[in-house]
Length: 531
Image: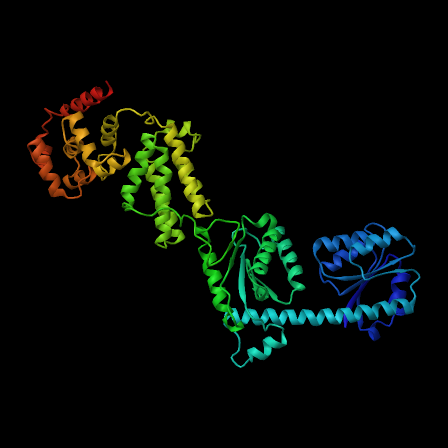
């Protein structure tokens, strides 16, 4: 039995329709009545019958307004419209809402019965098709979840459901990054997709939590037909394209192999962070940064952080993006996961801006927020490219605004940087790459300008800082670590060589006679380089 609701503002009409028409004989059951469109809508919110028999003219919400509201809410229900007037405009508007028939009052029993008989045949056919669709969906779900009973004859079952195709492919559409499944955009997309695939027996649509699974069998038509279908889905997505991820598994040749295609598509979605958005991912889709030149050694993360920091401080904007792209390409090539990549880039970004002055942040447009605002913004990156761009854009902006952007004497900038980064793993080789000179040339240039070798000068800076810390009462091993010496014995050796006393002896005697020697020496060289 198919269920019916009668909606008419006249009690006699409602009663007459219930008694006049042999509903049961025609395969129907009247399950409710309503005296207005508003009352009917309230009832429909609880349960939607198969058929509405509705008067077109009623006070308040009339029949057409009710049908319009039903259509907007997406409820699937058939309708027969009754009217006391032979009004063509009403009939035309009613047909726009997909009504099954338009009858004039008073209702003719034979005419109404004939209409209901035709509608019953369509409902039976529709129900059978729905049952077949549900069974097809159940079979696909059972195969993908591994829950299909081994006793089931898959070949026989797939043949009865029209699922014997030459090729099969799974396409996954993921909405997990959007939020609620009830988002109107998702609801509209599901409806459009179901409508397209309903008439195509070479596809199965399976709705799952935060995703849609498509089983495609139209692949026998070739690559052109397949790509056309992909474009249809892309156009169908409209305003979801930048937020929805789509992935297609490999083509397989039997229904039992579709889990293989599904897992490939799932794996692609799991690494969608490494692909540009707004495209259908396939096993052939290139990962972002896969075309970037990866030749040459990529230093340890501490050296990378140092280089980025230095590029910012000396204003070498062109080097920032080049290095970030190489880092990204190497991470992709090594197959690192999203979580690890995010952590490493967060570390690089935080270290690169650690010594940027507040006034530079203000000039760059980060007033009141600075590094904390920049770093917090990184978590919003949806793809690897977006993450790299966020880091690169800010570092380049800072590099343009920094006080160190002037293209002055390289040695003066090296002296200044050493004085502020002495505790880090500073190497002449690293600085030589920054200035695009060979390490031997830059070392000789440093010696000519300062009268000292790079490492000797760095040791002087570190030991001078160590003396200050020792006078503050810090332990020797702590001081060694603070000024950049990982080996405390090596620190002892360097300290005694330059100061003439061991660190502990110096701390006891508090020999302050030459405390200002190094600073005066550094200032003299700095002034010389500037002049």
